[in-house]
Image 1 (tube, one colour):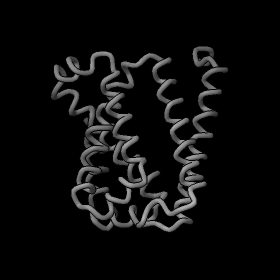
Image 2 (spheres, helix red, strand yellow; image 1 turned 60 degrees about the vertical axis):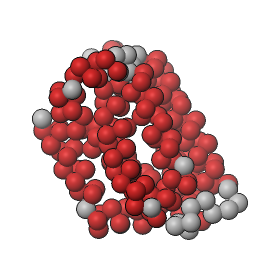
Image 3 (cartoon, helix red, strand yellow; image 1 turned 180 degrees about the vertical axis):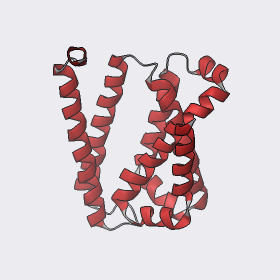
Image 4 (cartoon, one colour; image 1 turned 30 degrees about the horizontal axis):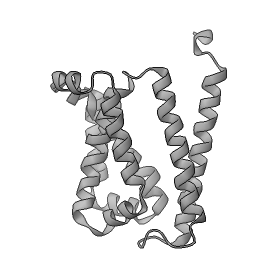
Length: 185
């Protein structure tokens, strides 16, 4: 129950207008801090939600694939430059961001991740690695400004942030391929 409480506190903290405004004022903080923190808040609150509706999740997310598919769709949607731009100018899109990331991405991630096999988990990590490389390349090598609300320099910084994250994910995948955790238990 403590996790759910901390998730709710994190969510409420992120909803505070000065905090939201500050995090959205810098492109890399908006994409690589605010959005993941919203997913983490939903991930933490999921413990309470899963206990309240166990039959629903058992019926609709039995093997974890539907939930992880919903997570992937929501995350890909929020990586689009147009969506990030609209979340700053259209209040309805901003509200959708604060609903979709915790409740349509964080909660299904928590329910699905434990149900996936290690191969399924690695496939998701590989998918996001390739996606981060592609989106990072888009932000870095695009000859035009992709987001009207951010400078081109911020766009480059975000692109390199995606590339750095992709490199870290590659290192993790190589590590899990060569290291057997059962040898260290």
